[in-house]
Length: 453
Image 1: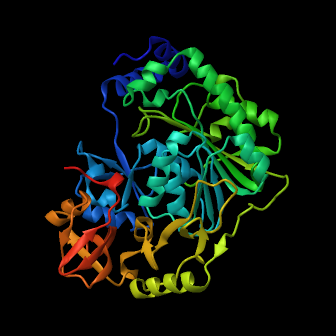
Image 2: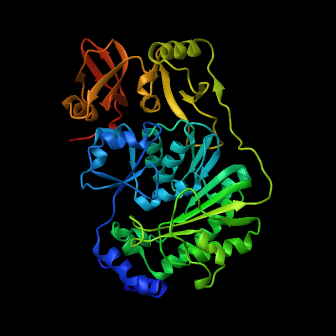
Image 3: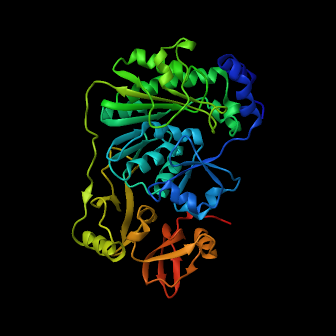
């Protein structure tokens, strides 16, 4: 794979004496792999103790690790159980720099495939509301799948252009994350398509689009809220110069220092932008373990504040309510985390919906011929200790592999619905569910998620 010479010359001019170190890292070293532990399931230190792969703590994210393995980790039962998300290390710095807290209302404006959204969901801890938006419809499926796998309870997925969302929502978010579509220069070591697509004209087109997205995103940040801007590219026009122009056009915003995590400073006055641009972060392959990222944290000092227009949904009534409650009490030890509502023929547990939402909260299941049939997502969102009937299997038990292939497995489980869990470190983690009878569990693992090995 040949890196474009025009890009390398731009980096040479930008980095000066640092260029030789950059070139050695960028051209001679392999891409750095990383994973981030899903703290909705377990603390990072507990995962490190049971990890089947060599790990080194990441300096860029408290729950992140550098992964020293070439294995296909997405096939491991721990991945199916949502214990971690594969994320390039420098990308994990964005939400770390935001440092969100439970209860916030947050928008991830360019969300697919879900790296930032799953990180946000973990940091919100099931409290508040996460709106994950992806305007490209073909990218919605992996986004929804990743949010489901990690057990996000409070995520609402939308698919609209930023200007449409800004018109509909107004300034209602405590934080808006813009991981902007970019020229992807930081991905050259691992993505040949990014290399093929790159040209100076392509980068300029990306910068023009980013300016529009940022302007729309700014309209959705409440007074006192935070706008996070990031890219995985390395040129000035999509990064420091982009934020410099944004601050000129939006005097109600100020660039804040990043304090939650120590990151290398971006360029400032030395490249002809305002000095405070050094408060942003520029992560380069020769300065941090990762492929490269730019991160800026912007605070809105004043302006209006509106409310996110959540839609309640139709409460369950009569026989349907009784069927659902009977099912729930028979299997789970905790109460539903939201009041169940009916949308179409599916029962949902959600903080509320939004007009035109693709998905809102967790689909609990649906009614079928006088009974309630649960959904896979209900089990991924439920801690194993709250599930009364479950089958616990170690990661190397051949029945785990069979279950993940969609096969019926043998197990001495009480008749009826049960969770199938991978067990490690004295704890169980749900993979999915099945229906037990006569010493076997009929498999209900979704076909689209199955391992065919």
